[in-house]
Image (cartoon, rainbow over all chains, first blue to last red; front, side):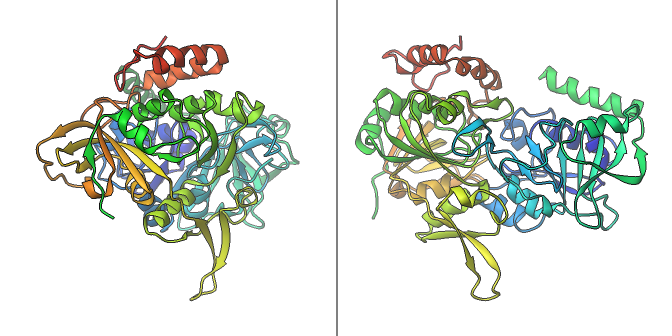
Length: 237
Length: 282
C-alpha cells in the first residue's frame, strides 16, 4: 500500500501528509521518482524534509528542516482552505461506495460502540485538496454500504485531470477510483496475485469493476530498497 | 485592560484563576503541550471543568480518566501516531468514571472559533461542514449566506475560555513571553480568553528577537510561571525532544482502569510528584 501510494505522486506536487502509511508513502516518493514533492503537515510545517519517519505530525524532526512553520489557523485558512494542496492523504475506519469517510463513531453517535478520534483536518483536506488518496485495508467492516457517520464527504473526490491520475482508494488488494460518470468507486486494478473474487468478498456493496481491469506493476527492487532504507533510518533514531 | 503578567509559582496562579466548573483551554498542537500546568489543576482537585483543545491527547485523557471533566470541546481525540485515547473512549462509551459531554469540530472549525474569540467577533467563518454529520451534533455550527456572492458559508461560534493555559520556551523578568517552532493555535487561545497563564522553560533578562517567533506581551497575560520541562512528554523545541516512548507506553497504562488510577496517583497526584520533570513510566 505504501509503495502503491508513493507511485500516485507526481514530481513537484504539493502533498498534505498525515502520520503512518501516508507519511511513509510521501517520503518514499521523494526518494524515488518525485524528489520535488513538497511535503506539508497540518501541524504547520511547509516544505518539511524529515530525516526519519515521525511518530506524530508534530515531531521535532519535522519542524527542524521545514521551509516555513505556520500557525494552525494559517495552515487551514491560507494553505489548505486556500486551495494550495494538490494531493491530500486520508485514513478511514469506514468508507462507502461514494467515498464518504467515517472517523467519528462506529454505531450510534450518542451511544457509540466504538468512539474513534474524530474529524481532525480530514473534512477540509477532502474538500480542498486537488485530489485525495485514501489508504485503507480491504475488509467488509471498512468497505460498508453506508458509513455510520459522515466525517468527510466523498463526493469531493475528484477525477483525473491535468495528467494527474485523480483520487484513489489504495488497499492491500488493489486500487479503486471514482467513476467519471457518477463518482461511485470502482475497482480499476488488482495487485499481482489477487483474485477479483477476493475483492468482492472484502467489499460491503456490489462492487463495480472497470473494463479493462488492470494489474498493478510488481514491486521493483529499487522501491523495496528505498522503503527499507527509509525504515532503517527511522528505527536507528 | 492591561494585565500584570507577573512571574509567580504555578500553584498560586492556578489557585487564583481556575475554579470548579471553569472553561479552560490548554492548547498545544503536539508541541509545547502544558502538561505540568494541567497536572497542577488535577493536584488542586479542580473538577466539573469544560476543557477545549484541538487535539486532546494524553493530557485530556488523564483529566477525563480522573473524572474532572464535564465537557470537552475538541476536533481530534486520539493519541497521535499510537491510536486510541482509552480513558476518553471509556468515558464516552461507558460513562466511566462519569459521562462527558462532547462538542466536536473539525480542526479548521475550531481554529476559526479561536480566531473569532481572539478578534472579539461572535463567529468565525469558513467553508466546510456541509454534507458531513458534524453540524447535526454541534449547535455552534450554522450556515449563512455570503452577503456579496450569495455563497453558502459556515459560521462557527467564537470560543472565549475563562482561562487559557499554554507552555512556552522563554519569558523575561517583566513577564513577556516568546515561543517558537510549531505554534499551533496558542496565540489565538490566549487572546480569546479572559485570563491567561503561561509556563516557560526559562526566564531570561531580555528576550532576543527570533525570526518567526510568537511574542505575547506581559500585558495580555495574568501569570507567567517558571516550569522547566513543563511540556513533558510533549516537548519544547530547542529545550527537549518529544518522548515518543512515553506516548506509546501510555497506551498500555491507560487501557486498564486500575493501572491508570494507580499511575496517576503515583506520578501526578502524590504530594511528592515532580512538577514538570519526567517521571519514570512503569
